[in-house]
Image: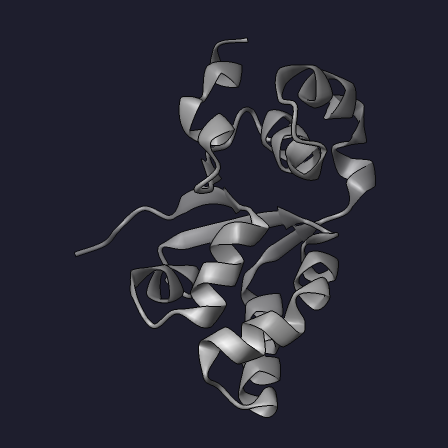
Length: 129
């Protein structure tokens, strides 16, 4: 059986969950059926929370570093210059400045779905705009 590859933009909360958990999120992050995109600052956000990731994951520092390295090879990082034309629109659609780049990236990719647990992304009002 052949499955179509789904395109998704994953926010830092999903990546964090995948790093500290052992469940479905981690499995999906590495699925060959998902092509995951994120703005280039995703890994900067993860660095800010690295000590917390290590604490909550119960993994050694080298295991966490290895997992992040694997993620870097699997997630398609998009430079800000590729979606910056959509930042103004994204800013007007959501109030959380930490998520503006994810929405701008989505808009630049013809409203590619965003994988997030944030309520404003679940409402998806911006899809109608």
